[in-house]
Image (cartoon, rainbow, N blue to C red; front, side, top):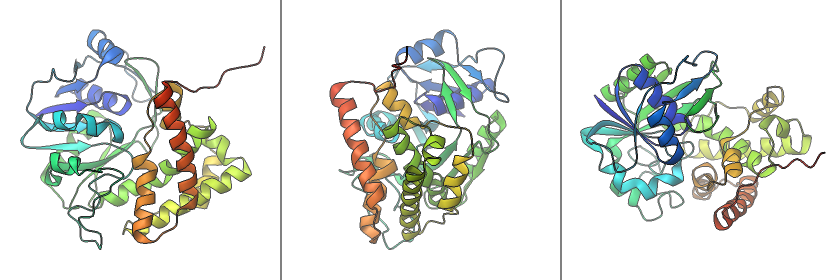
Length: 339
């Protein structure tokens, strides 16, 4: 079985490395310094459990240098990066193969192939012209959620936190049980990343998203960790309000969300500090992943009549920050002013 990892950042790099180490036929697609590091040295994987003594050799290529077709195409780009590459990615799948989309947030196919009052409703914040729906037929898509906190130490170097909650959850768009999801979960699980098959992938996505919708944006705007936000009383109250809005929207569209906002935020205040990936993007001068983590929730709130004033206000501030990063070509990071 031939596999492709399209986007060898943190999640894609880890997935490609462990599958390669397990002897699987897998190709990683990346560019720039990451491509050079993976091609010449391999991926250096660090972690209490996941760490390896030597770099893991991988087969990495630039976009356009793939050798299709591939039976499984793992798309590990961020949500806003998919559309520009969609036509090319679509050309890489073998007949009868599938795409596994490993993005945070609401997917553009959310209302496809399910019984819902909103069945077939497109989400304009995610797929404004319907291009993604045309290029990726929903019966070729496997939805996925990744739990794998990581930090990067430069090109080709990845440190995994190795938490008990680390896992990949996958599921069919129509919530059916399928042989291909069992096969994918078995392949990834055998390589070392615990994998589960869900028959309610949308609820699985929401149970992570109600956290991402809060911490990703607040960390990015404040340059603070989630813990630092949660221990400051006014910010803690804001985080709880944002999470409650996201939970209300999730339930309004039929998702089962097993999250108590007050308990979650209070728990974050007692845990070690973690920085969001969106804050990492701010500090690296990269476009922010806002549509899938914020704008789509607001759109769904409008659709269902659920008010989202806190998410809307924080999203507006994050959008201005994103405009400055993109338009000015700048990275924004703390600068020490102490002697």
